[in-house]
Length: 235
Ligand code: URA
Image (cartoon, rainbow, N blue to C red; front, side, top):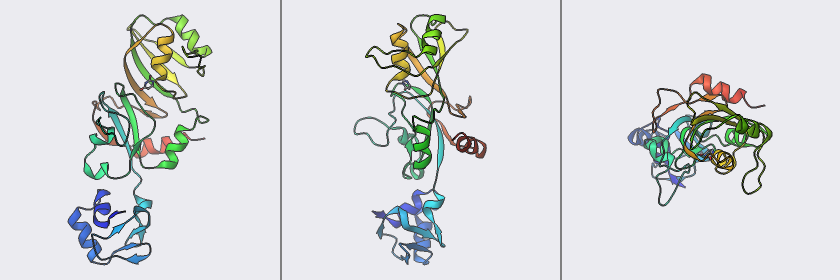
């Protein structure tokens, strides 16, 4: 339970004082009853402003260029989290990262409070493509490509689904396309081929592409086109 005015301000649509005015004006209901005291403690689910449910309006989709050094979690006792990169109204909107990138991995991370979409995107049955740029020690070659195509066996015996490894002009770099998301998967796949990863960045997540102009640590809302593509990508 949280203060009603704080929840309203947390949506980013009203300042704290505007939220208080709305409440005092009798325009806000909780669990069907008008609430006139801004400090009333309520839960987020049953709030209506002018008869419109707040939860119907508050789905947020953010594309973050995750920098190295922050963890893909909503809370952490010791480390800075990806949510700490957002300004306060968005930090308080129950957003969470869809999947995880390691602390030292950079790149595209989707943050949302749409649990249903996240569930569908992360389901192992859905096979959402994820593309990573990896800089490695050694030179990835056709043997690695073939091994990835067949399905790499990790050092602990785990068998990975077939994946794509694309060579680039830079001999120490390659792109890896995966349809699953095991713990440290790209690093472990390349390590099993004797090519330890020195730098990793996620370039794509399903239909979403890391925008070239978005520096590490920067974020923006998904465009309408991106949202449509994301929802359409769901079989
Ligand atoms: N694979 C990894 O090894 N690390 C990541 O952060 C993502 C994929």
